[in-house]
Length: 181
Image 1: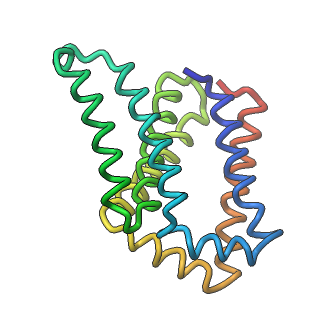
Image 2: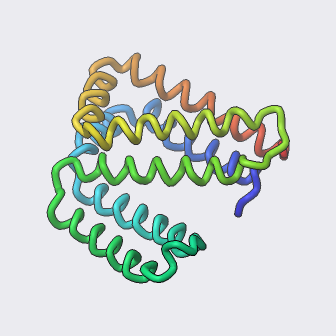
């Protein structure tokens, strides 16, 4: 398990560094965001990453009720992931990214569960926002396409979102480097 300040630094760095291209390479970022929802390479990347991460969590789980069938479930999840990669290609990137968001939210909640800090509320709140987006985009992946289309229709909207993400990232970085426990 990672510490809260390491999690905070990693979250902050990801938020800041994934938002900076909007200001410095706006045109290529817009092109990337247009292609993201239906991108198969990105979908396969997030599907593989999410599958391995989920299987790590599943393997570490010690639920006695599942012990007799755990190895069959493990193989079943691998078969399911391969099947999704082969047969569910429409909006694969959105669906796989949504699973990734759920796993990030789990990591955040697990890390902050026992945190004794006045700022500890910020992390589960961020995790719940990720879960809400994950649920929305899993149930209706076209909504991400619509949201991204709406965002890139105005450079101002995209820059406001990027500024908000950078601000949150800087807050996480400050908390992480301050070693808030």
